Length: 289
Image 1 (cartoon, rainbow, N blue to C red):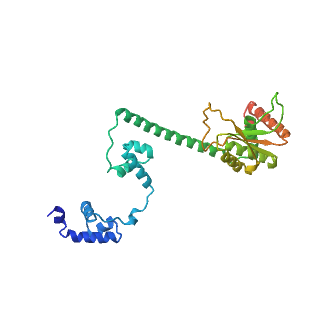
Image 2: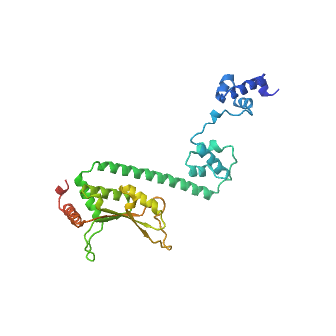
Image 3: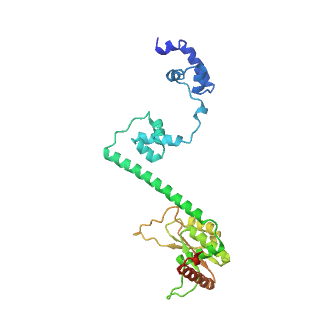
């Protein structure tokens, strides 16, 4: 008689009970407590060949990660490599793949490279968190903005990025172009503050011909709140010798905003800028209270 049968003399009768309980939908733990079988090996024998109830196989958030981890393990990746690939803990990986064959041991040089990569990834994560904290803190320092503050910011923004009269082109008109959506929305808010009517604005998209032109047009139209039909689009010729880095879904080209009948507004902007420069360069702090 085996040790199992010596421990549970009526093994077949106990198995019949275990199978019946399993078919009723009980979990392993429920069967264990009901039959007072606290030996996992014996419980496995009792339930051998009996299908697991469907409710115990409910999907979990990490099921996809588990399957991917097993795929990578079968390809010969180590725990460290799987962790770098999937971003999950080594403890979870160990549970998911411990029944699979172990890969060949890494060469010392490869192991050193992997360790260096892990350290660098950790350093990048720490730097990014520190960067985000600094940005969030600085943004909170700004708080609410007065109309006067927006007036001065807009004047400085325009004089840095907008079109300006030159000796060879003395035309005075307000025209602003930028690829940064935040710059565009700030400029629009500034024009609203100045009382510039929207029907005086003309919008033009400037983008490389190899980009997703339609998506870019929809992006800018939605941003400034106009119909796509009101946008003009200028395509930039692609030079095959040039390697463009401004590609991908985040590339929308530039948006140009021109204000009609804006000579007088241009002169006011120039005056505001001269006033900013004069106030900023006066000696002593009273002008900046």
